[in-house]
Image (tube, rainbow, N blue to C red; front, top):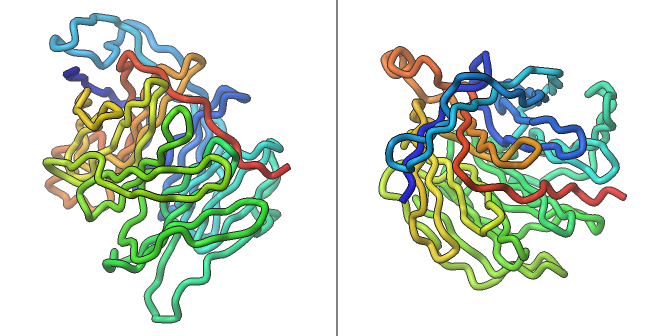
Length: 316
């Protein structure tokens, strides 16, 4: 098993940074800060004379690091759970209860609502959380209650035919990722403490045959990504690490992150060989914040794997 270390990358911490996403067309990284309603876009730059994140356990001693140069920030009037790229070049944001379509370089005020989730009329505030686009261009997005009430969330699919509920009675809908051939969907409902896998129909987007894929020994699963070999990289909230599992569910790598609340991860860079990891300060008391001065920042390492191309939402 590989043992790796991630190093801080972004210059400023966020409150709940999430959903890193590599834009192959523009060669830029996007990510969100959920409660602040922010979508950031940055260039990934090469550093010099820095460690690549590996340690003595993996036998590599490369000295290249990467950093982020912030290019732009979009500010929404509501929490933004995730952002996705569109085939047209626009962005799709899962914000508040809505899916907002935003033309490139247009003001946020001009965003068009494509659909909105119909939350139960029970007085329990909810919001969008993690989201991802499948290889056929459909968006899957989940929800959660602000107070994390059990069973108050759901998982939705948005495509040209509208919005469909795929799962209900979800507590904190989180990580989404597909196997390289699109036949498997990996999914985390965080409080369960595990990642599940579904059989996924690439033609229809239907789910079936849900079963446990990987059970965590500490913390809870948050965002995840899948590499070109089908390994599943899982951010561990409360665990200060990213874990990678083989398609068979065997632990392949452990990436140490010097921030306990690790929220998500994605492969980035021209070769998609840089693992970018998001973290949070949310939920940390003053003592933990002093002990984790880099909490809320983005981190990077080069784990010897490459990511899959980012699928755009089929808006044309």
